[in-house]
Amino acid sequence: MGFIASMKAVFDSTGPTDRPTDGSRGAYWCDDCGVRIRDVDLEEERVDSTEEVPTCPDCGDEMRFERSTGRSCAC
Image (cartoon, rainbow, N blue to C red; front, side, top):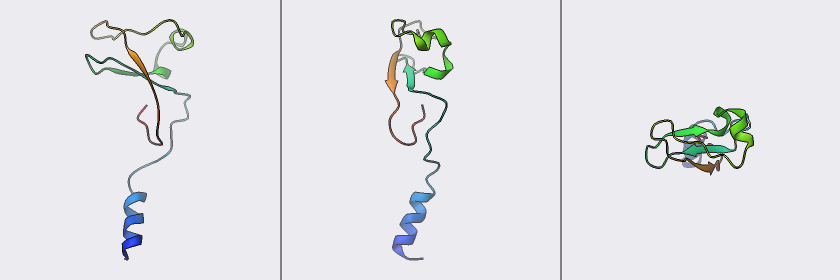
């Protein structure tokens, strides 16, 4: 196996590069606790409301929204 073929095999074996197709736009994070909740996992009325920010289930602080980026985002 040549160098180019070896490098191609390494990049092909890094895992799936497909993004989830469930409509997720990102996730809410609690900076203090490290808790992460995907936007599609929240109740529908919270996702549709731009005014209501979810609170952390562990500490009760407001969570921040982070948009998903990249091809293999964990969001």
